[in-house]
Image 1 (cartoon, rainbow, N blue to C red):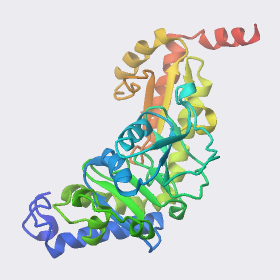
Image 2 (cartoon, rainbow, N blue to C red; image 1 turned 120 degrees about the horizontal axis):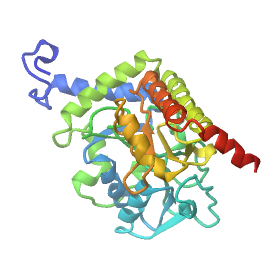
Image 3 (cartoon, one colour; image 1 turned 120 degrees about the vertical axis):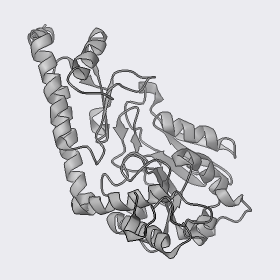
Length: 343
């Protein structure tokens, strides 16, 4: 922070046009390529504005006749809303009928349009796509909340974007991985700051880049390599999720919010079986040092985010508190639950 690479300058002070910082950008790009096995015919870009800016950049660049979207929750709906400013939008499938508690099947019975957009992990609803749609049109994916948490085949997608703040680095930078062939098909004049080709041609430094976010992302990706890469962290993420979901399913006071087949490994959402116990559990957990497990304000309940940096010990501590809450606050709950099932 104070003396970067013995230069006498902070990373926040050094010129972003200097060869030294250009080397940081290049190294971060190479780490992304290595960890996700990005093919050579894809560009790796670092943009500003968060993933929400991509909600408008994508249709601005690629929507000609129709953009097709998979509606799986709050952020998918935001992407749909923004795209409607630029042209016709069709919803291929939605899980709104069950409060977005599952991932709907996609059946493109009509021409799919210019692209199909999906959201791989739904942070609020606690669902995650494990089998991506098969389609003949370009597939775009918002991977903001599960990028680098599991292995993907980049070739299955034409464009991937992700806000850095979950698994990559500090807020302020957005990763975009885009197929070069797709960019060749953009044939209209666009504002420079909304044109993917401009970022590609200028090595993500058309304007002042998010210097600190890129630098810390580089450090974080080096850390990820030390954990065994994406393959290694995926195994740990599966273990963390399994520990927490096992306790949710065992404990008679709690129930999962998402369909079992679509449960997110990153954002575990659950509720108390009796809504009257919700505040009681929050107070109980907070008294034992747990904060930040309240569900999103519009849905309530609880949400435990198990991003890469969260250690297994934190998950085990949460399950211990859930067990303690059931055993000592409501010791008869298991017997009552069993009796209800028998009756």
